[in-house]
Image (cartoon, rainbow, N blue to C red):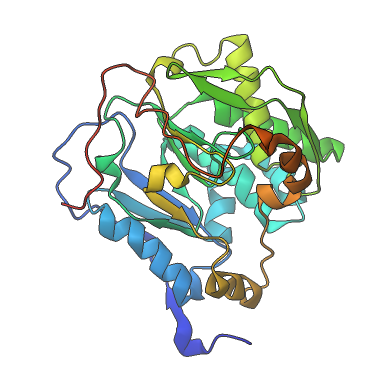
Length: 304
């Protein structure tokens, strides 16, 4: 089963902000996404449109493979050789997202993410980093919201390059928990990942980088302004219902197959591990509060 040409759409490379940015927030109002080409099956265009339609005050930028290479060559030439060694498109996208968010900040969203509610209704204006804790006790990699120069992302990029240079696809971490609106490293057995995609530059690498930064004090400046939107229990809390990470959508899977792009999920590769860790709770999401900074109640999740 394949898509007809009439079912393809073009995602624009750049859309200026159309709404008046009449409110302050620390995180830059720019949304970035990527795919090998901006000529995509219509469902992917629908998902990208949800970000522009719900957030007109944000600038939108889309990067195809050529734009990704041009960015790395221009801003991080020391990473280009390692990037070009990567065999898998998913891992290339992983490395790029760390670098582009580190450099510019803003919002990165996987193309299988649908924005359900405007970002302004659930991002604390004073937040410098916004995330959730996933079922694997890890920070979110499919949706990244941060100010520029967050050390987590440079550390993740450096670890990815080290893995690429040393042909290493193994990673281990303990995971985070959120207590009293503070992120802490869990006192739990190591979660070990050995996989050619996940263990190279994927979500486990980002989590391991975050744990290193927390342990060595690199996050001391940003931690008080880190917003943990929710923590997952058994299934993803989906940014407390504000975003739908719709990677299981049949039409999206078909679109990836048409583009000859494999799909990878952290949960699939850690299913056996997480099966042993699920004895603690039921399959429901538990909101952890809107921000680590006390006193932020947030706005209701409604469209204006």
